[in-house]
Image (cartoon, rainbow, N blue to C red; front, side):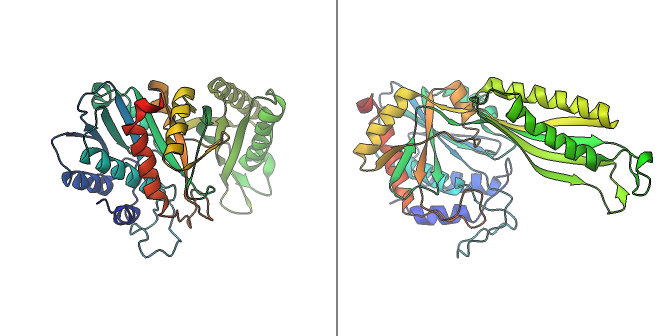
Length: 373
């Protein structure tokens, strides 16, 4: 029998950053050694793992993805099985995602099944981005699935509720890093310096007009500067400033529009303040756009599994599962875990009762896929 609590708690204790999930990879590989091997083909890529389950009479390959990495957050849950890695925590539910995947794998290997199944344990979902790279790997191309799906925990939903929707579910997102470079000096002689605190403040204010005054109000987007770093003392004019933020858009083309406007605003600040501005774009996440027919099939499967299905609204959060959906039709769904604290919170505690529900939903959809077409 699959001991979901043991697996979940052991994975919870070893959160690791993207592309450094070596303990997590070893845990998965060790677990796979306990399963019958005649139907399994296992390949690794960096810290990720592919598990191909050979069908008895396959007509398709169904893929299921689980992300692996943790977040740089010091855990504050008080759990007896808290993270043993100082400064890192599974604060986005990837430990639970992997547990559901291993549980479904256990069930599907135990009883022969006619279709092929590809389990993808993906590193670096939180950054620097593993999904896009995995779609270009030899194992993915060799076992290229006909459809792919994945779950994400939802703290706001009670245990026993699953939610999804056709079309857009997660937005296009892009990390933003901006450096302003001027000339420092004494606070008493501002005319001899080029103040990057002043320049950065004006820059941030002008950036807000991109969304409020340059875009169609019906075209949803968010541009947030969440961090400003500048200066060393109260009586020294800062010679540099760094802005860090994020862009979220519903449409991919809107992302390019916002980027172009940011660069135009930057040129204006450079001219007006006599400084230099360098813009770097970090990790980006392609939109999660769910295939409508597959979501309808999934809804039937969920209901027949005895679980409540809700239709959700799209969110402006990012999820790099979208890069898989760019290559292969599929969908993502929310699994209710009933936590008082949100995703990325140091106090996030998903309810473990949600795990067998997730396993049942995933297994039933894969095993009975043709029934729901």
